[in-house]
Length: 591
Image (tube, rainbow, N blue to C red; front, side):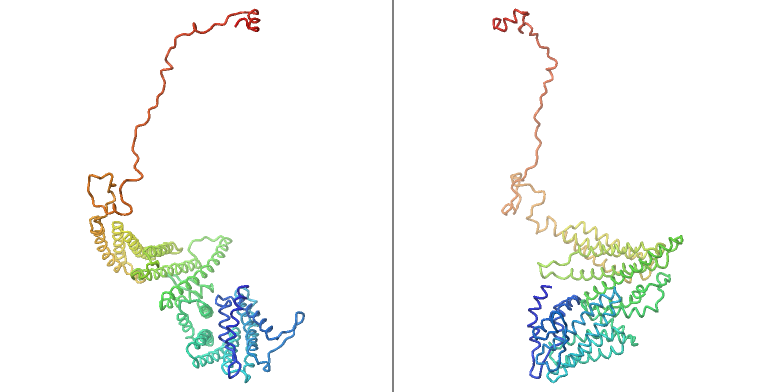
């Protein structure tokens, strides 16, 4: 939080430049101040607690600066800003910060209410508090001391807070009226200023529009759901508060529609859907697929794929929990597990949706990388796409298809197994094609040629098997186009192999790999340009090992068979002297 306080010290003077009084009266750029404060203090990442702390600290600084203290350390004495005090626009800012503090606390509680429903009551209390502060601000701005622009912005801000209160209370008609009033004021303000100043007002209108559409749907407008989906598409690839709000509103709308959904049919079997999360997901599946098909760019399409996969994983997890409960009940009742249960078949269906979505997402990414691969490389320092990147994508696709063939309940569905096997052949052909491309880059012509032949084999096998399976290739890449491309690559490969051989003009002065050093071929002439280069091939270093004769070892084995002559006559014999000799020996006479 220390970094926040340092940032605040730099930001306050900038904000106060926007709060200067004009010739017509006191002015306050309400929306500009709110947006700057929110973006710089936590709301860029959805951190409402951090923003609430900033509002509290700024309120304390404003009260200290203005001498507008509410009591002392021991006792609180409530004081309200009155019209007579409006000699400085910071009094208006004081009320604005109080409203923002209450609103940010309400939004923080809204996030926590997902896991703790009791906090919803506190949320409503803080929202009402924020709306009350907004009404006080609007009444203060009715003073003739305040300019016209600030009055309009205060009315729009109060209408927005009032609409949020009605929205949370599910009073759809009153919420619609409040939001429409807010939208109208901001549109009028946007039309009255230059384009640079109008951008902020237009952004605010775009934030309010999803709430208006959702209120209209709850009132009875059936086209509002389609409008929400179109707004999600127009939001682009970015996330942020706008995208999160749209996703939350669309989920709430589907939750109401899911009450009418009771079953789903797949692979000739009708399965009842009793889990609410599964109903909501399956109900919005068609809308999500349509939104992906209508996506304007690859970034938006990628974001929609990730959203769909995240929803699918959450739904599968909810079904898996129910499967655990069902398994425990079967163990208690000792039922035989023969036919696949409806819940297990629903789990297989959802897993199929997840895996097939992964396949389509990776295929979309592969098409994008393939297009970039064909573009000329402009920046040499920047790493561009390589065939290895595409190989990785097709590996993931093949892994997903292999998991599809093992889904429970579809082991005896021969048509499904044949379709999966056919899809695997198609993607194997494409994977093999890009492996060949990677070999071409390193000039391994023979390996690349063999892989191109393998691609043609896979493609022809696909064409022969597809005749028996109707509509099996409608969602798959065109193998005929792949065959045409492989044939063209084969001819290019053969030409490159001929031009890149040892007899080609470019390699005429390059010594073959088996050429000997200069010291070993002094009698043979060969034009070797490396001899005048920095690394001439003069001698081989380190030299090769050469065999040499070993040093002989001698063993003296004859010594064991030699008979030596006797030496007894040369050995001195000691005489037997007795006691006399012993005494002589002591005194040295016998030596």
